[in-house]
Image 1 (cartoon, one colour):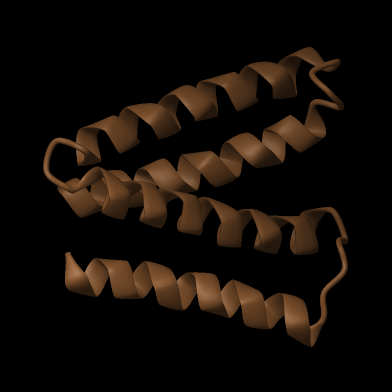
Image 2 (cartoon, one colour; image 1 turned 90 degrees about the vertical axis):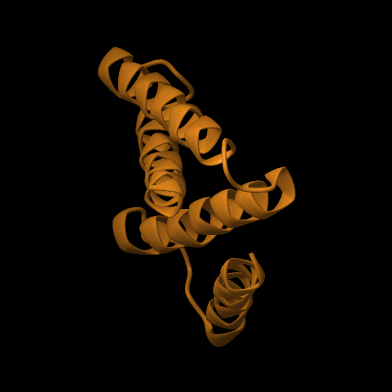
Length: 104
């Protein structure tokens, strides 16, 4: 359940960033509320995972999932640029997340 909580934390981090972008600087109410709720859920699930995981491992994986996922969301939904270098560095983040999982 610890790892499932951490994955949920990362997913909610991505959802929060999506709605933060949609909120136009917190000027649009519904996406602002969605961003706040998603952030709360992300922190909640991260805190649940911290009951069993070392803080460095959990935080590294949480930020890795959130970062890589948010870049992918930006590419898909906000038409942000994509090139080989950008995808290579996302791959590095994913390899680091997997590595942290394997050594924990």
